[in-house]
Length: 122
Image 1 (cartoon, one colour):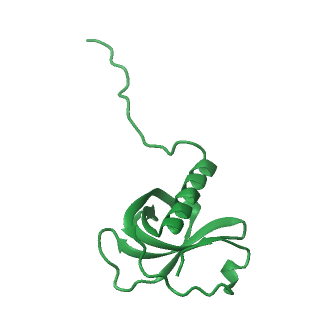
Image 2 (cartoon, helix red, strand yellow; image 1 turned 180 degrees about the horizontal axis):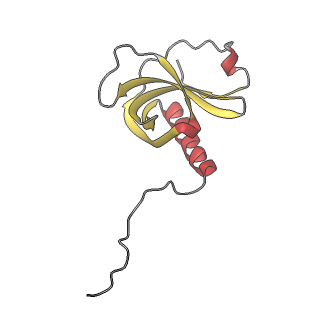
């Protein structure tokens, strides 16, 4: 009987450092805001199509507030503004779909006081 080597397995890993991944995500969100396009991403194991509204820093971390227009292939019952930390996003991709209507954002809200990086045009 011949001796077998252990079976090799494949695994998926994010290429680059977490900082590189956040930088790529940051650039895609900026581009989507400038071009008025939706994004697709995964957040907490939920696939979403979102309309980003505002990109900002809070407590030294980057966040994006966005309207989830699709979650796991279905339209949510109510469209509301959600807060997403960039470090928790994965699989971020640009779509060709235009942004959903921009909601009124109160820039005096405490979460936007540190720094607003970019926002969708009303």
